Every structure is written in C-alpha cells, then in structure tokens.
Image (cartoon, rainbow, N blue to C red; front, side, top):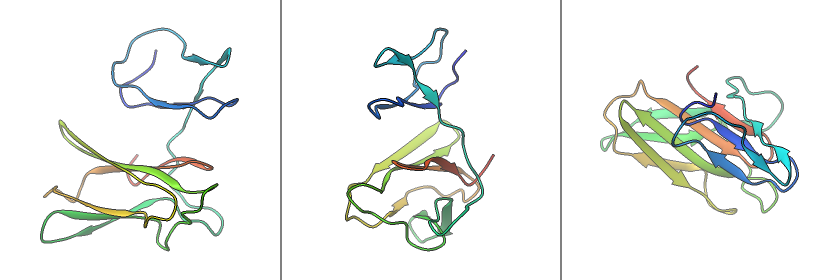
Length: 126
C-alpha cells in the first residue's frame, strides 16, 4: 500500500509522481511498475544533496547540499519540500537557478526533502 507523500519514478521515461492520496494498487507508467524513491540521508561522492536548514528572520533558508548542487540541464534539483505539521511547502527549480529558497516556517525542526533528477530523493530527517 502506498503512503502519503511517497515519490515514484518511471524507469523508462522518467515521469515522477508524489502521492497525495494514498490507497492500494500499483502505480504503472510505460507498462511497468513505477519505482519507489527511497529517502537518502547521507551524501556520498562529490555532489551534495542532503538539504541544509538555516534560521532566518522570515523563517528558514533551505540550501541543497553543504556545497552548491549542480544546476545543469541534465543534472539539477527539481524541487525542495518542507513539511511542518499539516503545512506542506514546495519550491520548484529549473536548470541554472540556485538550489536554495526561503520558507515562512518558524520551526527549524521540520522535515525537508530535495529531489535530484539524477540521484533521486534526499531528506534531512528520517
């Protein structure tokens, strides 16, 4: 059974979905089951993906990685999501943009996820 906010990706065409209403069944794209994207929490290699949170006067600043993540046409952060209780905030990115954004959240102990089009789903909290 799928869970709320799980992310799935098609291994054929790259379509990506986020579950907003959890129920039974198998998610299928291009005739094949979609692949559940596991939340990774520890960076490996030179690219950094784990979201970093900094407190600001307006809320929190989220940067993807301890060093800036590449934002190239074929390799970039697609989105960042912040979950604070019942509130969910999402910021979408395009290649060439800086992978950081500010959210109006007063609680610094929130769950933050980032999604890299090449390396998948990353989070700062398990």
